[in-house]
Image (cartoon, rainbow, N blue to C red; front, top):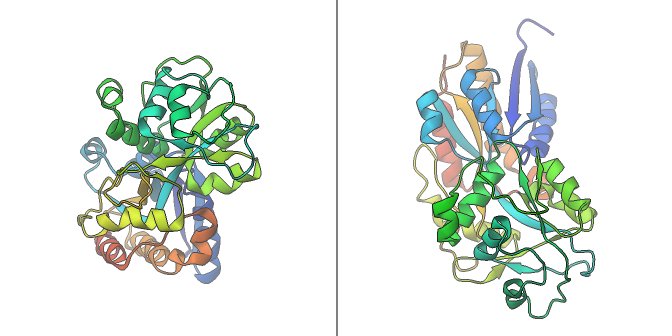
Length: 330
């Protein structure tokens, strides 16, 4: 390695990790004098690592909390792509391509232990034409500080006042003790656990949906703000994000759960790069800025995003991101 080579380390969100790997490889091929590493840990660990300086860029499904900024007020969170969360399940008796309908109230009851079987009357009411099996529900949750948990519990909190008052939302949750529940430490482990567990229901990032389908798992239509069962299609994700584009503030911290779009999917989010505004050297700052600018332009092409279900950032968000990137220095 030459003396002028810059090494950029990224770690965090397991949801973003497949794309981060692709970006690292492509950027290194197109850019001389730089090495980029990507590591899947969790959103919480990514934020903490960026805050402590043990990595250059943290990746997170969740925006920075006020507590994160108290620990390190120099952190920026810069959206990289638009993502969504899927609700996957393992019901072998249903034919491939069947999508059951779920809503936040039913999911809150499942994760609270009030609904314990797939043929519960409340699930049947949402799926009158689906032959639901008499099978115990095995809810899976993340065991780590997870952006996916932040998104899922945020959705439950908007849909169910009891969940909001008793448990609330965050990258960790005080999960109720439910018979048969399971935990997993990453997006990969969530998918594998669900695939190995008939009756499973789980929340997971859309980038892992191809693997879930390959393992014959189903994914749900979720009731949106007007009660319409909606799949996480490209059109539905883009529709959900659209009302928030002009509402996104300069620091780009915004919640997009259960948005107002009548055709939108209810659980969408920005995937964030978390980076310190102050870097140890001018060369390091320049290298990080160049990588992030590439991610917002070339890296936002459909050739990178489409296979993972991510959506490109609108031009307004790219401009806001560029303004934040310009703040990075030494």
